[in-house]
Image (cartoon, helix red, strand yellow):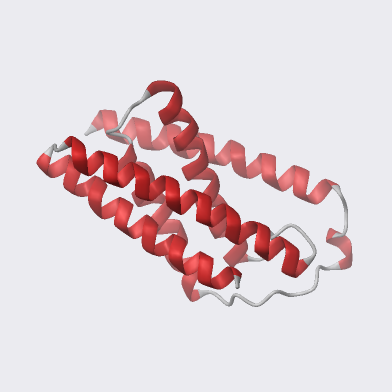
Length: 152
């Protein structure tokens, strides 16, 4: 079931990226609003997909490359949404959504089956460590996209 939500998430991220790129070209506020709504809806559905995957696997879904790329894209979008609500910078959306899409497209091609957790990873520290590491990397990705935006 989580794969259906994951595919819907990818479709919403593609829609948001296309609308954001049109916003950059045409400078229409309506396109930015539609893109932001699509990105927000994609983030919510992506969150639901993670919860369902957690319930299916019985552990935090960050242990293989498919899950890691997906989680990193989710973290980048989440950090951007928090940044957007705080500062309201619309023009950063095309850069962030494109980066998240670049991360999530390879995740589609990777095997999606849930494998049992290796014994060495059965620790309550694994999700804490990995979640904070990915959130830190997502903040750096936001800074990277901001720098690219200002250089352009």
